[in-house]
Length: 368
Image (cartoon, rainbow, N blue to C red; front, side, top):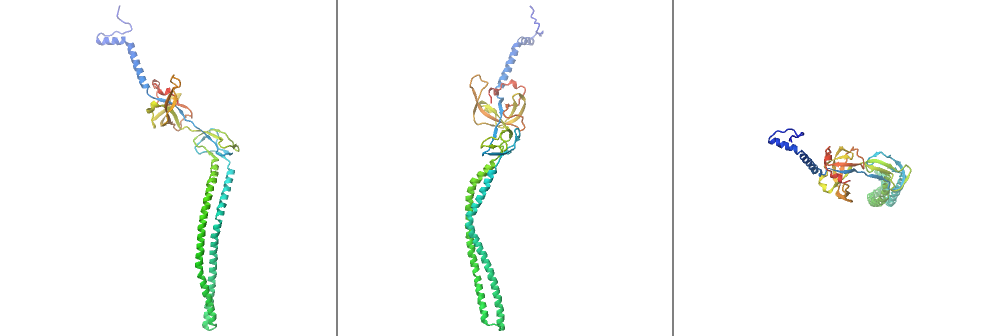
């Protein structure tokens, strides 16, 4: 029988020719070795932690009044965007503002009433000073008149027209008037001392009345101010209005929801198995894709890892009730992202590529 094989080309004789012939004879074994090497490479690469599931965080905020009352105005509609601090609704405060004015008038009268007695004492001293000044002016005018009269009499006495007795009587009168003027400084000093003492007592009384009024005001007035301020309902977060449950002129009870707002998403929450803790660090770069598009990704960073260890069900395990222990990972959500609150995403630790299917993904063994 001929040794020529129809599918094997004619080989050159010699040592190298025999080696080539044997390779062609054992080509199935060579192929299996290559396949085994490829499988080994895929397995060793696949044990690396590459991605995990995540969810765009979502929070619903309910806005309700802290006090019962009638709705005066609704400033938003469902679907509108709001920023933190934007007014969404206002309750009627007519009754509260009226009570505040009455309280202010009452406190003002109370202060006045408590200091009225001491204010009267100060006013009396001021009146006494005014009277003393008036009397002093009158005395000065009288002294001026008597002094002029005395000068005229002295001249007449020099001419021998009158007796000296007439001049002496006027001179004595002038001296008495001038001695009366010496009384005014002493009297003025006494009244000023009395006025100063009354003013000090009045200041103390005013301070006491102010403190007492402030105590009352700090309780009642601040309570009213808080209720009036609380009647203006604002959004505590950036987000979108989800629902409006009230209308103008409608009565609402304390704690009854008027507006619901879905907070604008700021981060993504993933679940990191505890044994893969070293794979993710705060500040590290990650790539986020949707579950149905793994090639269009968002590059972002890890914000933080939860210090608490939680448990999540292992959906890849055939054993019932088996769980994976790990930590929540908080990923920054870039502004302008199209991802919606509550949307499920995939968090990649490396930039996604077309050969990802060759890698065994530990992230698929758990769910967020």
